[in-house]
Length: 97
Image (cartoon, rainbow, N blue to C red; front, side, top):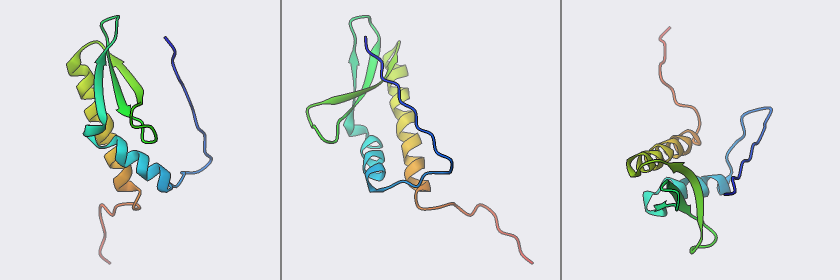
């Protein structure tokens, strides 16, 4: 089994570009996800590759179908927040003089 691990480091908060937003919107759409069962009995979550419609990108492995679907839902929730905050910070409270 091959695992892919990647890290990125920035000295300041990176600003999302158009490609980031496209990917985040793609990942945030549950129709682009699937769950497959592996030979060892685990369930793998995958999303459809944006560039190649017939290829899938593996994301997580879980012991149960419920855990796999929860993982997808949490990932979608995470990327929806990233998309929302790409528009700038939210004002949560203002003070009067």
